[in-house]
Length: 92
Image (cartoon, rainbow, N blue to C red):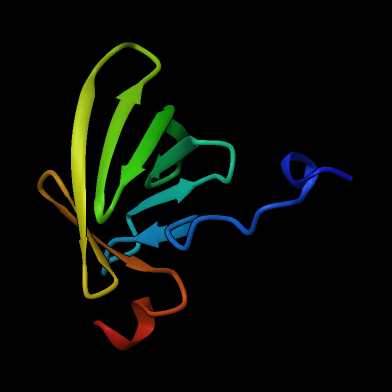
């Protein structure tokens, strides 16, 4: 196996982010894609993302762009505040 074949650990931001009320759920997938659900609407927004430091750039599948920044483990994505799913219950 060459070093290029070595499996990489997923980026620490990969996983589910959820608003405090649970209405919006955004999953950052390990392949650079995201899937965002709103209420009962699954995959309301889907697209790709790139991470640079603590900054995330999003491009949804329609071409709309957005940004986010992670501070102290919390994702501030445009007007949304998303907590790691495992942390959401402590943030209410």
